[in-house]
Amino acid sequence: MGVNVNITLLKWFLLAAVVSFQFSTSEALLEGIYCGKENCYDVLGVTRETGKQEISKKYRALARKFHPDMHRTPEAKAEAELRFKQIATAYEILKDDEARLDYDYMLDNPEDYYRNYYRYYRNRVAPKVDVRIVLIVTISVISAFQYYSANQRYEIAINYFMQQPKYRNRALDVARERGTYDENPNHKRGGKKKNKQEMKEETERIIRKVLEENMDIRGGYAKPKISDILWIQLVLLPYTIFSYCLWYATWIWRFNVKKEPYGEEQKLYLIRKHMKLGQYQFDAIEESEKKEYLKKGLWVKENYDLWHEEKEEEMKKVLAESAKHKAYRRYLKVHGEGRMTFDDS
Image (tube, rainbow, N blue to C red; front, side, top):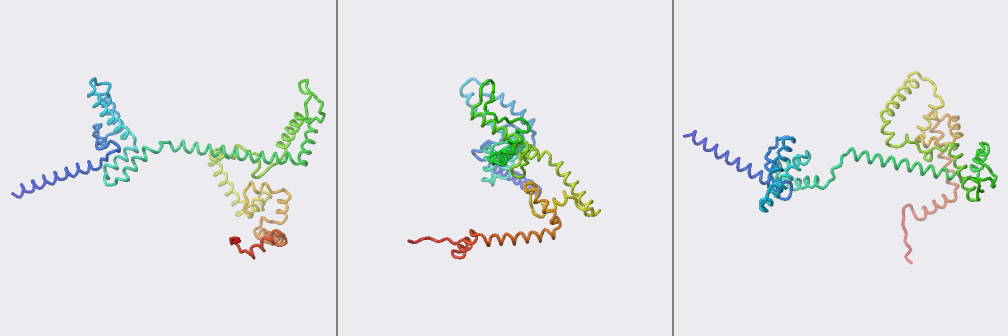
């Protein structure tokens, strides 16, 4: 008697479990997304454990069977077309790893309505672009803009020097020495005399060429190099890291362990570090100033700190004697810093 009762209870328990599973599965299927109220796995006749290759095989077989062209009567065509769309939709979802993962999440978490809708439309709306392509395009755009900007700054510097009489005259002297500049306006080109405009344009080209070949423009206005753009820097990054580590280890060995005296290159490096300047900024400093830094021994931190304090004091004196700075301090004294006033009249 007790055994029969237990068997009856077990049957009821299994029945309740099946009903519960069917209920939860139907609840997981949301209208308007994925396969709607149909289970995508059931549409293709596969399970969640089925691989992509088997899913593709099932899809091709069902697509041939339910293709509208395989049916003759209008009713059969309409029914086949509806079924064909369901099969195609199910295949689109299950063949894509990310879409299939989101679909499985919906089946396992039917209560997360908003998240399920979000995950579905995220995959539908968001463009499926390879991240590597995005990175390549982004780096290429940055590199092109970087080179273009550097070239524009270099053009500004060259045009500036071309407008200065000092550099123009020096460039013309160099061109005369090379024999590339003729001041005679009556020489001929192709059997015709050059007019004033042509002579002027040729002179400008000669000056520009000499300046480009001889001017040592440094800093942010230096002539752009291909090796400075981002793409090349990324390619050379492993070599750059290796070179820096080797240089740093050599520095420690030579100057910290062996106590070798600093050379001029090492002294200038320490001075630049004390000044907290980049390489381009430091290169823009006149050579005479760098020699003055070396003369004062600014590679020694104590000497640099003392020199820096003296420079700050000199700057304060200059500002104190400046008429504009005095007027500014009087303005702050009367109106206050950051104060805004209005005229009521």
